[in-house]
Amino acid sequence: MDASSPISLQQTPHQDYSVSEASPKPYKKSLVTSLMEAAALRTPSFKEDTYFISHLKNSEKKALQELRDKLSVSYGSDATSECSMWGIPLLSNDEKADVILLKFLRARDFRVQDSLHMLEKCLSWRKEFGADDIVEEDLGFKELEGVVAYMHGYDREGHPVCYNAYGVFKDKEMYERIFGDEEKLKKFLRWRVQVLERGISLLHFKPGGVNSIIQVTDLKDMPKRELRVASNQILSLFQDNYPEMVARKIFINVPWYFSMLYSVFSPFLTQRTKSKFVISKEGNVAETLYKYIRPEDVPAQYGGLSRPSDLQNGPPKPASEFTVKGGEKVNIQIEGIEAGATITWDIAVGGWDLEYSAEFVPNAAGSYTIAVEKARKIAPSEEAIRNSFTPREAGKMVLSVDNTFSRKKKVAAYRYFVRKAAIA
Image 1 (cartoon, rainbow, N blue to C red):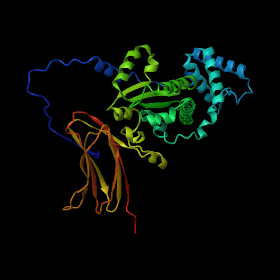
Image 2 (cartoon, rainbow, N blue to C red):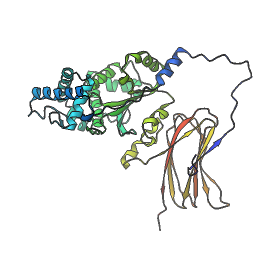
Image 3 (tube, rainbow, N blue to C red):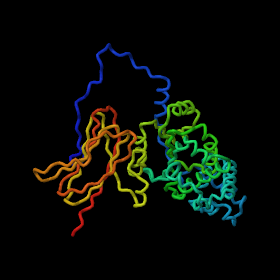
Image 4 (tube, helix red, strand yellow):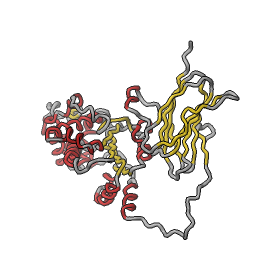
């Protein structure tokens, strides 16, 4: 650690986990284990396509111009309202329109006629579905907001992040209330499109800007059989009408059978498609999400520091990241706390399963250390801890994370705020 770092480490002697017996036989992986490990390996990082016209191949520039011309013939130069998406006239011949046209071209490998057909069907669907005005509709799914599908923060590159978690539908009563008949299913699909449209409203639609979102899908407790119809319809709607809108798809809490299926079908996917996928099994959620999303933007239930109430207070305060190795105790020392000041801190460790404590150490000689939070074992499912303390004398706060009884390295993050005492 750097000398100026507030984090200090305590390394415990290596513990011998071996037992007195004959030399062990070579470890042989099962088929399922091998497939899961193969699926967990992320393919080469997806590199977003360029939307700068000068960076396109000559054949791609030609296809773009052909699509513009065919669209103009189909709709006429004065059909601005009928030929627009997300408030952008597609016949305006500007860079925003080109971003959208290029998305349809890439979805059909720059086959102009196929791209035109897809685009025309999408325009027709948007008009019939009322997609342009759907963001403002009250569809009555308050109980699903922030739970089933919701936009929450941004990734490290500025992409809006959409979280999806369908585990609540394992409850039969909830399932019947949302998907009980055809009308209810239609209403849910409309709501799901609304969530996506909210995410798209955050995009720039300009070369060099943010032109796609991140999808994080939590597969924990997802009732795959019951949701098959809804899932297929959502997938079909998004594939047909929102081409190239997702930069990366992150699957978390992935059960073994999903990993196995992905390994089986992976050879049939294009490298481009595979490069967008990230597969993370249960227990590695925070570690996976931290690679792409800063901890202060990761929801607390996934090992981050972000709570829904925080979003009302403007941009989140940046967090400091650290790792806790197996057999290691980490002490975070926050110095310079004045008497009467209030310090508030957030701390999270991915997959906790270790001991945590907090104490205040006064500067004055002879003063006693105060146990603000006694050492306790934190369960793997526990969310980020937030606490406050107002000392009567100056000193430092020490947050301790004790991982000495584990071999597993864990990702972690913390942040703090200090509010000085009011002057009387």
